[in-house]
Each structure stands twice: as C-alpha cells, then as structure tokens.
Length: 432
Image 1 (spheres, rainbow, N blue to C red):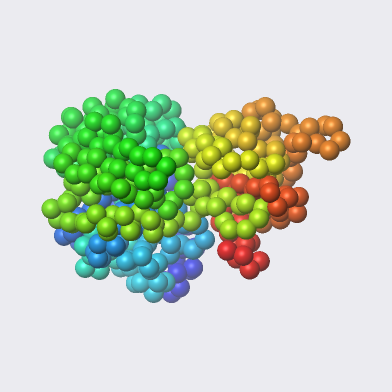
Image 2 (image 1 turned 60 degrees about the horizontal axis):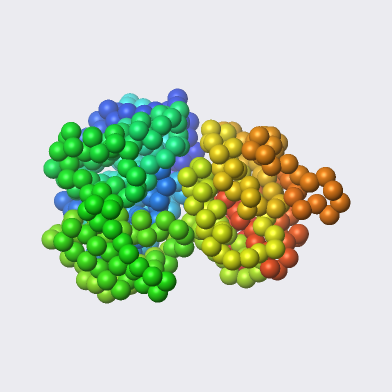
C-alpha cells in the first residue's frame, strides 16, 4: 500500500533497504538519471567533519540577503524531518515532500535505496523544479560515496577534517581527507577551510585538476574584538560584524563561505552590506546555542572529539560559572571516551541519558565510558562531582535544572537526539 502522509512514508523508508548505511553511488545515480535531476543554477556542496551546518547556514543567509532564491539541504534534522530542506529560508511542507517521494518511488523501478538516498533524491528533485538561483547541499557522511555526491557542484567546500565515522571512512586524517576530497571536481573550485589540510586532500585535488583554495594561502581572515576582515584571491571584505552563530571556529566557517561566494562572484554578485547583514542574521539551532534566562543553557550537537574540543574552548570563553552540568547522550559508534576527555575538566555534574535509537549508547554504558576517561563521582559528602543516569533527555535536563543555581550553566551536547529531546521539553514547558 502506498503511503499518503509524510510520517507513513518515513516509516516505510526506514525498513525499505537492508542496510541503514550502504556506501556507493551506482544505485542512487541510476534513479537520479531516471528522474532527470539537473541544475542550471550554481551548486555549492559542503562536506567536512564539523562546521558543515554552520557554513551552509551562512551561505544561505548571505545569498538570501542579496535577493537570490536559495535551496538548502542539510542533515540530520533536530525535531522534524522537514527541517532538512529549506526554500528561501522556509522549511518545506509535508505535501511538497510527499509529492517528491511518490516521484522517486515511481522512478526507482525496483532499485533498493536507503532512507538517506531516497530522501536525498526527493529533495534534489524538489530543488531542481523550484527555479532557484543557488543551491547549497550539505554532504551527509564522508564525501566520495555519499548520495549528495551524485551532483557535480560548481564549488565544493571541505570545512574540517578529523576522526569520525572511522568504520566507514578510515581511522586517520589522511584516509578521511581522501574521502572528503571526493566531492571536488576537475576544473572547478575546491575549498578547504581546515588550517592543516591532510596531504591526501591536496594530492587528490591536484590529481583531478581541481582549482584548490587553501585557508592561509588563498583566503584568510584577520580581526579584533569589534570586527573582522576577509581576504581572498581577488576580493576583500572589510569591517564585517561577527557571525550571529557563536563559537571559536565560526570565522573559519565564514571565511570558507566567503571564499565560495568569491569564486562565484560573476554568477552571483553580492554587495558588502549584504554580506554583513547575512552574517549578522544567520540562525542555526543547536550549534553552541545559548538560551536566554538563568541558569545559562547551551545546546550543542558536538558528538566527536574535534567538536567537543571546540565546545570546551567555547565554554572557557564564557566566563565564570560556579558549576557546570552536562546533559549527555551519544551513539555507541562514536568515540565517547574521546569526547569526554575534551570536556571532563569543564563539567562538575553529569546527567547521562538513554536515547530512542537501537544504536544509541545506554546511560549505563556512558557511565563506564566516563570512568574510562577518568571521570568518577566524588565519594565525599557534598560531592563536587556527580554522575546520574536517566531514561530520556527531558528527564536528564529536568534533574540538571532542579540542581543548578541561577549562576550555573547546563551544557546539553552529544547526539542530535540529545539536543532535540531537550528542545522539545523546553517547548512543551513554554520556554524556547
């Protein structure tokens, strides 16, 4: 029976392919060709270990300030699947998605597709039919074999390269760098925002004849506490306000975004004020998002050691808080010990949570991982370090809220599901 609602479609797609992740482009490219998906407008793909979502959001905001019609595809979502696709800043409707799911189902003719492959094709077709001026596509996992890589981008950005998804991408930066560089194309702009790019990425770009832009060589930034400047190959952007997204790495992400727009300046001209407005107005939930009110609540989807190190630096930059509570949940396949080691000196009280996915680590498993990283509860009365376990992120957050003083802070981090669970709890409790 053919599903009729978005929820029914998504439920069907979760069980349609024997493997949740099935690397390779042959099947998805076959269905792309049957659907006739192609873009006449410039396409920017954004890959990397961390910083992809922020970079996509900045590109979207600047392009929209310049009056362009923009489609943006990101993943995963926080609360609603529709968040993955935005047209001109608006999340797409259920009806639009269902229509595209029906088209993909009709075109696949027995070709088995994963959830991600099927939904990627649907969103690409939606964008291809929308008469857009620019398309920004976040690469899901890796690059070379990710479903998004069936599109030949005009500009491809790799934001950063670090260890994550090692079972699919390799266990060194060199191996992962090669996989990320798979989104580069011969004769087209390839941008790397990582200040220390793996040699494998540089070598691959040179081998295929991509026009490689490296941070520190082809583009850079400088600044003080009030403003910053971007310098590219032939374009400077001076007296810029800091991006509305908080965090230590956001100027690296912003610089990569501005380098991409410089490379496309003849097709997508953008004025100085439009860049300034776009950076100031950019919004992306769950990326070092500091909520108003007390105690201070920080939402951050840091789920690997590289992102956790950035979160630790951002927490240090916030100034003094008597105690820090952590609401933390993670997937089993993540380097949980590596994440905890980055943050163990920043956190006094750990509120660990189960998550509603089979591949999520149980809170009891997280306790063992904390011990492996050297985090154990204090045994003295009036303990300065506690560890508690909960069945849901909402319960873990409620416990942290009940114990935190108004000058303390609560850092909610780890899996997207951890942040989403707390966001939903806050909304239902009347606080956003």
